[in-house]
Length: 345
Ligand SMILES: [Zn+2]
Ligand SMILES: [Zn+2]
Picture 1 (cartoon, rainbow, N blue to C red):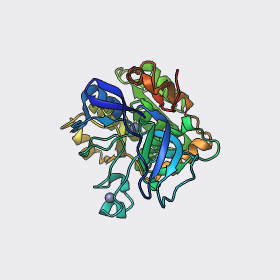
Picture 2 (cartoon, helix red, strand yellow; picture 1 turned 135 degrees about the vertical axis):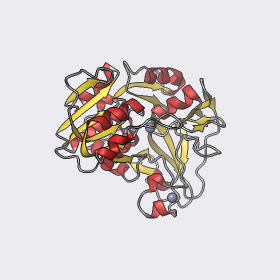
Picture 3 (tube, rainbow, N blue to C red; picture 1 turned 60 degrees about the vertical axis):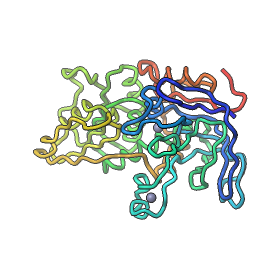
Picture 4 (cartoon, helix red, strand yellow; picture 1 turned 120 degrees about the vertical axis):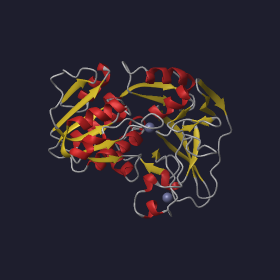
């Protein structure tokens, strides 16, 4: 079978590797679509992400949909042929965080296509993958495989908004209008935020955020833009940039909440700490997600309008082109790889 493998910075290949067989209790999935994520692009452009450099070749991808292909002995999972999406984490289930309902920060987890551990956890941009039954989430009627590939990033957005607290009627600034920022906007709109202002450096990304529910957008590099809010109750950084974090903190009401969602550059980050002190801001992190994937597939099946976020679908053998498209933020948001056997442009 074919898989999209990163061998190092600027070394992305389509490799032929053996198709895995499901061991006892496990489930094989024929992957249909895989969303190219900012983290996948980090591996290709920089040979690693955050503080975790690549140490061996790794199949990329953690935002996948597909169909159940085979069940290992005794596997309790949806029947062969069921359309599914994949919860990319396999938390340990026994650490204090798992027992406390925070499996997204499990201290002994694995995540598809991640170099945080060694050996690395191979990812989902392969024509067949094998996962645990608790990673398999059946797609409800009305949710096709293409949109099903958005369940993972939408879950990330749901978790971040949950970390923000009750958003109904609130004024919110979202810094960063990439795919995750846009999905955060869609969730905020769905949950009844009164005002959703979005900042970014790229007009195309701002246009997508308006299409999914932003009430106003501003250029991050134009401090004189009249659409900047004077004050917000919640700021969510989806830019992963110290500037985005600072822009949010600077506009928070006293006692407001700052959610750090975007992964920041490696090492120490400049941070407006005195604003946190003197305005008694609450700063929380948002990392991955856990149960939110069930809400995500439900929202997508119910018609949450996020189609503007998918800006391209590219066959697996043109993966390099998919990565170039995804990197061109002026014209792209979420780009999907089509991994179905026999798919072509
Ligand atoms: Zn992702
Ligand atoms: Zn755990």
